[in-house]
Amino acid sequence: MDFDDDAPPELVDTTTNDAPEELRVKVPITIVTGYLGAGKTTLLNYILTAQHGKKIAVIMNAVDIEKSLTVNKGDEQVEEWLEVGNGCMCCSVKYDTTEPSGEVTNSLRDTGVNAIETLMEKKGAFDYILLETTGLADPGNLAPLFWVDDGLGSTIYLDGIVTLVDAKNILRSLDDPSGKVEGHEDHEDHDDHGPLMTTAHVQISHADVIVINKADMVSERELSLVRARIESINGLAKIHVTEQGVVPQLEGFLLDLHAYDQFNESEASAKGHSHLDPTISTVTIPVGRLRPGQLDDVDRWLRAVLWDAKLPAAEEANTFEIHRCKGRLVFDNGDVKILQGVREIFEINDAPVDVDQETPVEGKIVLIGKNVAGVDFERSFQQAVN
Ligand SMILES: Nc1nc2c(ncn2[C@@H]2O[C@H](COP(=O)(O)OP(=O)(O)OP(=O)(O)O)[C@@H](O)[C@H]2O)c(=O)[nH]1
Ligand SMILES: [Zn+2]
Image (tube, rainbow, N blue to C red; front, side):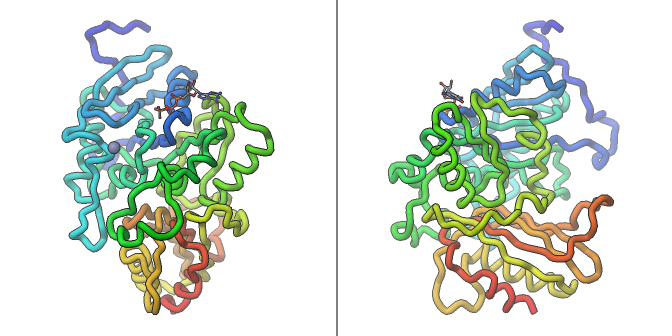
């Protein structure tokens, strides 16, 4: 199919304008992050040229005022420019520190969402949106932009975060003081002490899928060291190994991740309790069956841990910082709820009804963050919920 140079790409409009708002199909957005040169562009180019019959909008290198947007249709590619208002999409997102919740204010959140919605109004909807961040982006700042409450009536939703790592350089990046990131806003006082936290750390800790790329550059042994270090940082993410970003399929690797609305048992399969990384690790808190009335206790405990970065009733101050949390809460009346959190923001929603699956007997909460090793979250949780 040919494109007229001047004509906009004719994408099929799946959001028929006369359809009621709530019937519109929401478009998933995947954030693709990874350290400088890890292979993000290589991966996205591979996706744009792979035959998959899907309309995928790829927003490359989201750093300039105007973002280059490549729309893929069949074997044609069309460049578009996406305006996102005031400057860098990731840097313009700031937490409102006057809100105890640290919630991103709606106006800032709207920046990224509106830009994409405007584009879809002009061009018709996409099946998927992939957003490549700059190599130095902290996905914890970007995710809340697209993690929008249903109530806001957005036409897009955050499907998940994919982090690429360069198999050859990742271990060095994790130990390189020049890659140090500033502490997140409310914990700056702890920043000069404690173990080194690099950009590579925050990109791995927030990931739902980690692609270890450039496998051709390392030996089997090096690769297993890389994998072990990554698993010890983030015990929730699915890990894939690739060369030239060639993933065997898109679903589950980059698309259809449902990382922000589901909690799959396999993901949280306890991968042991290693502390290979001195900075960030994953802890799992087993949660027995709860009474419906205990939801408030869980909520209060999470607010203390995520908003105040402290255990309720703890004598000593902690210095932990939670980047990602996920969980499943099982209630004795049969209800199942899913916990999702990124940094200070969290949500507890009813689990999607899955007729094939039996109601799980027990719940769990998984926390990924800085300085969490050695903190007795489990005991604190048991005390708070009773
Ligand atoms: N040996 C090898 N090289 C690769 C592989 N994947 C990508 N590269 C090369 O690595 C370099 C960086 O790849 P990019 O895709 O530009 O990486 P990026 O993450 O987009 O880089 P920035 O946008 O600069 O952060 C390029 O020269 C790629 O050709 C791989 O699997 N093996
Ligand atoms: Zn930025």
